Length: 613
Ligand code: F6R
Image 1: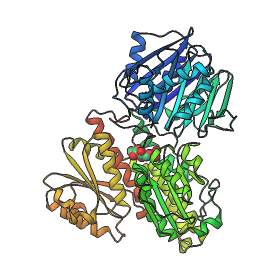
Image 2 (image 1 turned 45 degrees about the vertical axis):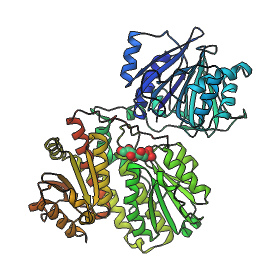
Image 3 (image 1 turned 30 degrees about the horizontal axis):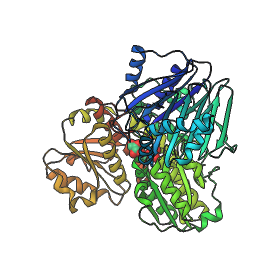
């Protein structure tokens, strides 16, 4: 959460920083602020609310031209989202400006100490203490990077800090512990950001920073050291996507664009990894066959939508590999003393690769001796970097806060891994490998078919606009699809929505059914053993007054008489059905939020990358 940008170079810093913040606004939009260094002084502007408010402020109250600047877009943790708590925060003498992503856990103690020393704090944030600590430190340690290094030693928690000083106009310094920070290497200019999206329009050359590192950038140099001043190694890489990928590309919303990109995202995730015979090649996996043969338990851990993809993956993993697989919310995982051994494989699924709960869960698993495989969409992010192995999803940048294409590609990456594992261990699945390969490679065109028929779904959203509550039912892999449908509706349309396993209805949730309540039901293919059971569930809710919206495959006429609305899905095997059944539910929520007049790409209270626990 929180987006951070730093720039030094010949361009106008304000323009570069604001443009970077625009691309990072998905990380938080409670407030935005900028500090530039000009004429041996720091000038700041900051405003509560979205970036547009800051831009308006810059028109009303312009800042001087400058070639060095930092900017911040906030997702509030400490202190209300108002102008005062917006970053940057400056030292009492106004010479230092600081922006921060993360949480400084010992800030209360540090703040009390500063107050006792006579420092006046203006905001309620944890960040402001850093500006004052730095100012104090610079009296004995004059260099900005050296002073920041000393200050970092006394901070606990997670932080990316970016600082500028009035006396060093061509320098931006940053520190990183447990929060994301990447460096963009330009030609005569350099960048710092939470995410490469901020500088991709200027350079594709990026540098991953490691844990507990300090970086100092000037227009022509990048110096990376550890918290003790020792030169540190870093990895440079080239970002494979370009600025256009992080733009709306003619769509009104990033979410609509990302929904439309799903066929390609799935195809790209499969590309080069599976052949017609079903042989899976995971070149960059990084787990040797000997280990894969010893695995006796798999635990998938993730949050939100990524967790739902894990719930779906469990069915395929157990079916194809016969290895027991548990799926656990990352925020719960390390607090319950899970049983982990050297033959346990923990799979951490994360679009951003920065989700703090997932990061902490995977670190805990490694400390307990388990190996960790990351399934991730963000190259070079912390979770894959700290894992034993990685399978990247190739969804491209996902900007809308609500996850869509990442979800489908996470399912695909998990399936590929399950197939690879089964292939390596020589399970009975082998005889089905070619069939599964064919089914998977058909999925991009199946998703395309769903995307061609979205008008009906949009009409349903308009019809249901005044409903208070919406329920989603599914069984087997359709159950996590129901959970995902409900999550999307909650986060985008702010409606009460619940997903249930349809078989559980009679154990309680059926009491919620009343006249007119909309119930979406994901029906498995007709040849699935659960098909008839869920058709009975549809009848049960309809008999009690529910308005049924049934997602069923082409040609399934058995549901017609019990459905108020039917959303047709292309025929595909049960395990593949989540890849098509999720799409209308995404479109439904997106449309519902649109007709209600809500901000689809930036729903209230949320941020895309949740880098706090
Ligand atoms: C929902 C959504 C969130 C994320 C969750 C995990 O639409 O986007 O639930 O799925 O915060 O994020 P990652 O995958 O980045 O770890």
